[in-house]
Image (cartoon, rainbow, N blue to C red; front, side, top):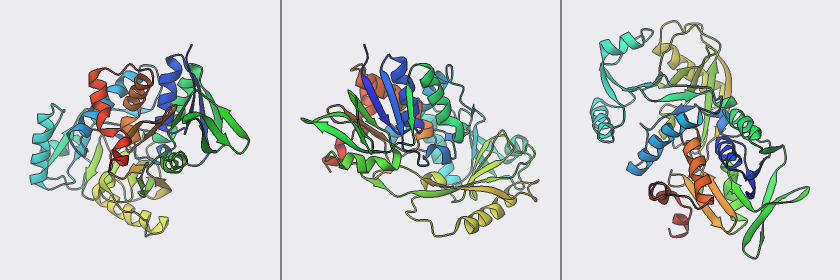
Length: 360
């Protein structure tokens, strides 16, 4: 018989992990405090072209492969339209192309004519751009719900709008979670609480340092179908959703954005972004922003995922980007908790263990 597991957090990491553990026969309960999660405010780009080091690239590439596995059983809204990228100098583009080719990652270097053929709505195509044909995007607002539904079909339970205030420890072992209504016991607790992870870990004398990385994401009103790829441009990252709305992080270079505060009002920031958007594509003269979402991204201090046991019976998983990495992290957590990591899995997780902060 499997263990009883409480997962704190119902974003993509918690939801995908719930699916893996419930499918493996564990008695899984997901507890969500009801606060907005990072998943629902994400840009939704699934990629391995953005990475911090070689190990990070390999993990993200494995994340794309894991997406294709999990989509066989989860009705998640993912479209594999590829990405056109020219948000860097030509020299940096050449270097990126060479490095990604060295990883055997699908990448092409396109000319301006080839770019125009693929994206005829562009007002001015760049002289060259990188194409990442294996990359995709997910409609993030419904993504975690899709995983939770699949997990519930496998026997998991969901408790919503109940905040976990602490992890209950007895004799050095986690035995459940504490809420305002009392203790909820469990054999294992997984903290997948996004920006709330640090506080819960601190309560059991564990350091998981996160940095503040707020962001605005906007959606436009519905537009005719204009864009065929995710576009990473010098003026911002954009993609068109199946609804026709265009999604755009307000900051330029969203993936590498390290701003700790938001200095503009949502209206001012979105107005400026819409002006940039209209300059990228024809057919957007009547585009207006219809929604602005503030995202609080759970970014560890060194930018890399944090995944592993922090005490007997207590596991933590916090990272950015959860959209790219959610399915592979969930697979690895399920294997790790069952003691079934093979050498390749163990090597994949090794750089991301939480103990690296204790040693700093």
